Amino acid sequence: MSFDSYGRRIEYLRLSVTDRCDLRCSYCMPEGFKGYEEPANWLTFDEIERVVGAFAHLGVQKIRLTGGEPLLRRNLPDLATRISALPGITDLSLSSNGTQLGKHAQALRAAGITRLNISLDTLDPARFAEITRRDALGDVLYGLSAAREEGFGPIKINMVVMAGVNDDEIDAMAAYCIGHRFVLRLIEAMPVGETGQKTAFLALGPIRDRLRQRFGLIDGVVPGAGPARYLVSPDGSYRIGFITPMSQHFCDTCNRLRLSVDGTLYLCLGQDDKVELRPLLRSGCSDEQLEQALLDGIRRKPFKHEFREQPGQIVRFMSFTGG
Image 1 (cartoon, rainbow, N blue to C red):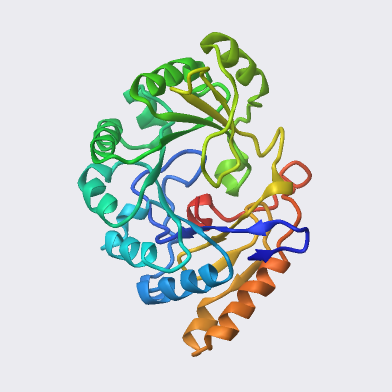
Image 2 (image 1 turned 120 degrees about the vertical axis):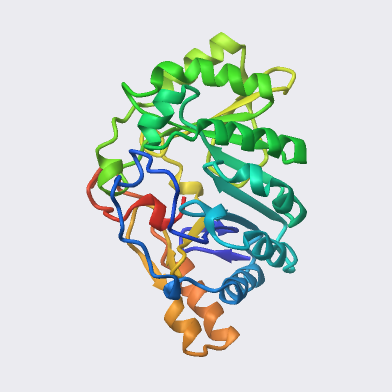
């Protein structure tokens, strides 16, 4: 097991397999963005498997495939099969915008992915097109239906709450998720990149109190490796989570690292501390050298982000970092 210098056990890796995305969500990526990594700079499946295997040897048990939109990476189910077979990996999940999920749900389930997080900020087609700059709500809803039929569970809906944009739809989204047995997770907008810094922030505390009363919820716990704090129904049949990196940060319990598609290991979403793994991998490093680089990075993991203190500090886009 690996611990950082603050005693936090690091057991969770968010693995970006592409920086491409077929949506242009207003809080994530500019409409005309073209600054993608060249595919030659992407880690290959062999390189990814090697890095994940090294992490597993150090005690990391949980892997989440992210992007960009991970389902745009060709043959992703093959990679998932390889990762799920690695000794020590006990949980393999996927974050997606859902647009391609209907095509791949069956293959992903067969590959060993069990849990899904799907980004969905609105149920209104016109508003969806405005937020994402794409007319694709129908594709997302179809993907959710296909995922449910394949037996993924839980399926979590991630809704970034934006003041004056979709905050009037929270109750409707909660009702939708309750009706479909999805787990709703409300997320505070973070100032990551220029687009994130322009997104209207809304604290979730008052919303949490209101939903508690409206739906008769109580404090509860939902299995997973993430930072959400949950309210649940008394019978446990539905759950709503709250991710509050701005109003009530959870840095003291952070157990995760992020690996971008180009092999950059980011030690904190809100800091620039990083370890460049691609040069190491392509210079013929030994397994011992690779594991030592990972351990050195883990020990340098910052204690907390500084979104409040320095909201303009992180200029990279979320799609590049890995969700």
